[in-house]
Length: 154
Length: 292
Image (tube, rainbow over all chains, first blue to last red; front, side, top):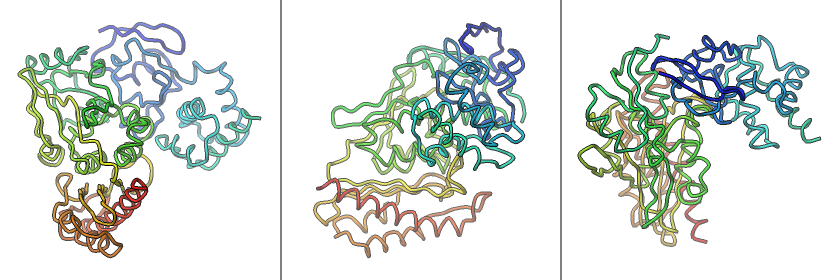
């Protein structure tokens, strides 16, 4: 079966089996390695991608299901101002330890700030409730997202 | 994690096409959000030669009010319900339940019909929909039928649908102006976890008198439960802190929980009473506010 969709602003077309997961299509076939393979059951959030701007677990979707839709990963937001601000805040505020959860955290934070440019700390926590950090650096991650909010609004 | 077994995937654009596929194909399963089904397929609990993806069927995704009913299409996502102004105004208990299912990522994919069909005793949409007196509109190639929601649950992780049937919509009467409702849950943590116990209460007041009461508890029996005996204790009575306390305590002997990885049966039994008390208090509060 063929699947055609917009990946990071570019149209892609691939041949996929019906049981191919979006996660495997992105990582193995298309080389998008910011999308990590973690729990594979929708709990850890390291496979998070934006589907039409909304965060979803790519381990919970069949590749076919993105036909005609828009998939965005951190690679596609490298020049995006909001993403760059978030990345700087993460780096400067020590919100990255091993880095495995970072792309997913950034995408969840990005989706939140796109919708809600001035979230409270509680809203930030809710936005990243589907992203586990194995280093348990949540405090610094939350601080970095709130710092990015300040940087954007100042 | 085991890889997904192979299957063929069908992506109909209309409900009629989907129903024909469900009828014609051997060992076909519908897939909506997929957040439960893909896991069941991987661990072998569920087998399918064909998956019929309901994701492209626009007519199954809506939230509407009309003819004194609120109607929700089966593939409406938790996120859509969480964000719906109609839900916020007319069924905050369902809105609150949808807001705490899974994570943002799961709520963007998971659907209300999927949550109900998965028939988990802990399904968070079940208690509020039970107390809203919901009916489930079921369709097949041969026609449609409507059942009370409670009849959809046939056992733990078991629904009563025929293999060729699909849920079309969930509907319930528009709550009366003098109503108050509440959803409460307890999880091992706040985010991305199944409920250890969940509860919903719906009250209609006439001044201080309770005209209607519907109560439900989840994760304390093989299926989500309506607590009819306790509803009887409230109907026609003057609502007070004392009555709410007595009603909540009466849940103790009406639930039938199990020990599992998330909690012991004894703890669940205690928490049933506490969550029901919280639900009744919030419902009472909201009803008084709605009457002003």
